[in-house]
Amino acid sequence: MTPQSDEDEVWRQIVASFNEPAEVSSAGQPWPDRENVPERPADRRRSEADDPVEEDGEERSPAVEEEHYVPPPPPPLPKLDLGTKIAWFALFGGPAYLLLAAVFGWPMDGWILFAAVAAFIGGFVALVVRMGDGPPKDSGWDDGAVI
Image (cartoon, rainbow, N blue to C red):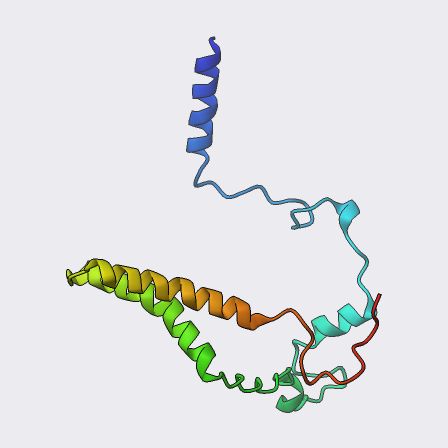
């Protein structure tokens, strides 16, 4: 047989066994037995927590079963000053106008294109300049460890 016919036969076997169930391992797990970790008592308690009846035959209260973490509400967003709002509007407004003008066929004179591109670049530059790289102004006299 040629190597091509061997590959064809292997391919036919793969296709024929596509809908057959996978082989089940002896332990019902997809990993070798040497990788099994012994069960700790805490894990055993966790697996038993699924059962609403306790060992002494009493049912646990639903409140115990329903306990889960509820995060606190997030803090409000910081208030932006007028300069930052204008910079964000320019950053997204210039390209948005160009996109809408292209989609709807609005006239795009040279000065409109210049204004839209200048708004985008100016908004970006304004936001970068306003970022600053120093400590916050309200950090106090102690800036922490300085190396």
